[in-house]
Image 1 (cartoon, helix red, strand yellow):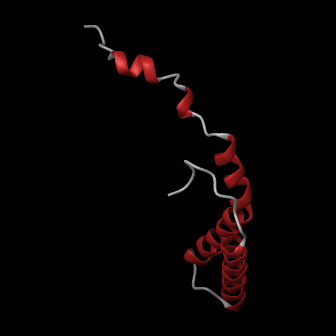
Image 2 (cartoon, rainbow, N blue to C red; image 1 turned 135 degrees about the vertical axis):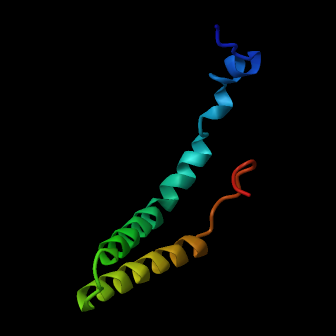
Length: 88
């Protein structure tokens, strides 16, 4: 029995539009501090899942949440250039 590959899969497998544009990569770079802060917050929350959270765990989560929110505020207040076709 042979596998049947559609023509569309073969054509779009290497389409240029599958790669992010330079503008999209720049947007990701601008958001990277927020992404890293969210990862730190998730790490703190995951550590607290295995046991009853103690005061240190609560402080770690609170600090990570504060940093994440502060960085989101900075990102939201930053004036980003309007790039056609990027974002929603």
